[in-house]
Amino acid sequence: MIASVKPKRRKVELVVISDVHLGTYGSQAYDLNQYLLGIKPDKLILNGDIIDFWQFSKRYWPNTHMKVVKSILNLAAKGCEVYYITGNHDETLRKFAGLRIGNFEIINKLELELNGVKTWFFHGDVFDIIMHNNKWLAKLGAMGYDALILINSFLNFVNQLFGRRKVSFSKKIKDNVKSAVKFIGDFENTAAKHAIQKGFQAIVIGHIHHPEMKEIVVPKVGHIQYLNSGDWVENLTSLEYNQGIWEIYRYPRDKSRRKEEPDQEDAPEELVDMDDKELFEQMVREFRQSKKA
Image (tube, rainbow, N blue to C red):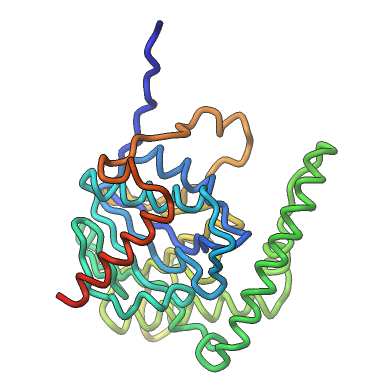
């Protein structure tokens, strides 16, 4: 009998992931878990909206969603520095900012100097005018967005049966509706201007589900490298940093590529005998105990 050989993980210096929205029907947790099982980052930055507490329900927490949590904890257990930056959908975790358990830390923002470049990481919801002025409207929009993703998933399933290509309604809307395009542009420029004024040379954010990597010039203020990690609902993207170079990673959607990727990984010993509920309860207990200390 020939022993199976596990695929080697791809070495990456730094990975940024945002807007996973675990706990919602739109979250592409299976694909994200496959990606996590295929990489070996020195640092993993979870840049907000990883767990969607706005729409979280105990009735919908699939095994694929818990596997993402386990994979993240597994990376931390093996020496990866994991920073969980809070977003608006997981803002309930902001009261735990500063909490550190091993290599896992919850924070609201992060500053790093990468190859001499002063870089600022945060989710970006602070620059969303709708979010701050009409929070109820933002939550209503999030529910509508999740419903649209669910309908979109069903129609794509039908398209696949007939050999047709997948489509993303929400992406088409954002790419073509003038108000949506203007919102993205205003959001990017506002974030860039604020970061330049604070002395940063690069800014890494999420929030708007729009993967991007470009230089933004703000008249009379300066210029900055702008990066957005996208999401794991529509775009299935992350940011990867190696040897001074940033790249947008786009997860392959075709089935032939998926088969080449690892589909399982051993969990750390302390997680092996736990079911999903026990693991989640242990995480909550550890957060509370550390906060009291």
